[in-house]
Figure 1 (cartoon, rainbow, N blue to C red):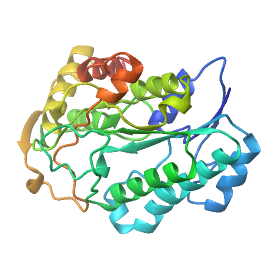
Figure 2 (cartoon, rainbow, N blue to C red):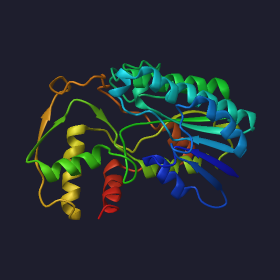
Figure 3 (cartoon, helix red, strand yellow):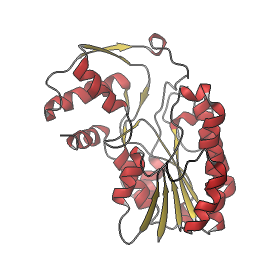
Figure 4 (cartoon, one colour):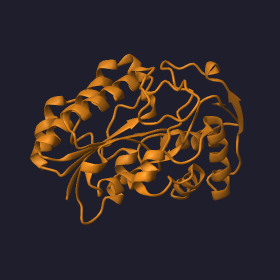
Length: 289
């Protein structure tokens, strides 16, 4: 089975390269090899490789910058996935498309399930929702996996890496405490996707939510990062972490207050719960030692 991995140098993409092993044949394309903002390049590239699966781990993820560049965000997050899905269908290939909790506004008081009505509150979320819809319309053999609060040891900066850097530089750090969600390790996402593509897509096609288990705030996550980092010797001492509200930390794009996603559907599919967030955090930080 041949897998075409788009976004192979991102934090999830790099983990996918490591877990997608024999008997799979994996072709990874980085942004330099396939830039999703170059829409004319996408279809012929996919058709050239004739894959059995297309995994789209690439995205425009600069949430605040998307407010300034909505057209570019739409190109990469909506128009490009539509072309990927169409090209995959032309090859009789199935597609995995990674999406986000930001398709919801975070206003409800319980974890979101797959059938809840999306209501994105910023340009990034709107572009990702448009991408979901486009993939569903272009290729019936699709797996859309919404996740949240992704971090990993590979790829560009993320919340964990930012906290480690700030923890080494500052005595005091302020972190938002009124936004909740589930920190999710990129390797756990990759392992889940690897499992899913070995199941018959004719029976599993659809939207799934996947995050690590447990729900906390960004403030709680920061406290845990510093505690684990000190235990592993990555930091000698923790800074003072001061909880603040979203209103105290204004950003160009609005963020959902509740990013919790229910993983009941994917748990039933896989036969086990996602790993607990703190266990995965500890494993990720151990890779940095």
